Image 1 (cartoon, rainbow, N blue to C red):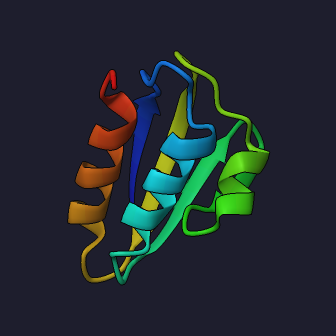
Image 2: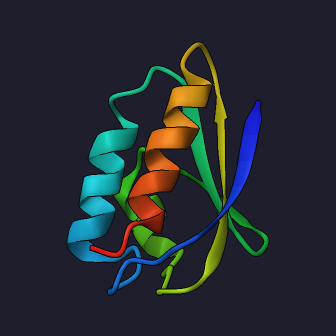
Length: 85
């Protein structure tokens, strides 16, 4: 399992469209991908799970992946959250 702490730099946080884009990207990987905020951990391939975390801008979350393409998943998804779109 690979894990990385990420600060969300998206203007609106990981809400609505950015969350949908994130989930869509997460589903491209065969690895299991999870997002953790505080004590809550959700499947990053679930729009309802990601939205339930209510991740705002400048918040720190932990991204976890386990599987064949885990390194690529972490790199790609972390860069999505760290970008300032």
